[in-house]
Amino acid sequence: MTSDIIMAGFGGQGILMIGNLLAIAAMAEGKNVTCFPSYGVEMRGGTANCTVIVSDEEIGSPVVGRPASLLIMNGPSLEKFLPMLAPGGDLIINSSLVDGSAVDRKDVRLLPVPADDIARNRIGSRQMASMIALGAYVARTGVVRLETLNDCLPKVISKKYEKFIPLNVNALKEGAALAGFHA
Image 1: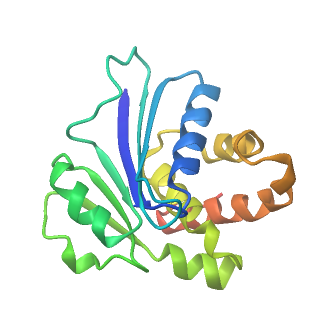
Image 2: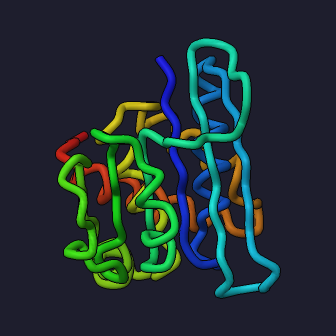
Image 3: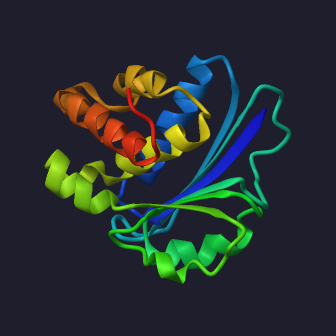
């Protein structure tokens, strides 16, 4: 089985971190992985995206032309990447910042996730929005286990910030619940 996703948003939204976490979790489960981050020249607020491929077989290229999934955290990223999404693909949008009515394709499985609102109001930290979206993606696709993501958090969060690991675990769980997964 091969699964690929493009995650995209503004710099500072945690796009590269969740891409890295997904890749590390997939490797922890013994899968083959490529992770291809890309970001604009701006320090914060510029563009950021990350392509992750997870497969049981060898991966020939880190480049994806028609991703099976998109995780979109802002409007400009939706405009840029939606035309690339394969028919029948999963589209997870941060509905706090992205208007779901702008999705004019009926051939995709749309999952609106109010990630910023949940991060702010339930988790208590806006920085958790991308983790909420990642939890929804993982629960919807089953690409890796939620428990594996939780176990791999210390590998992407520096010791200086390890006190925030429980917030990240909670954010992943909130996102998974939105996709219908209950632990």
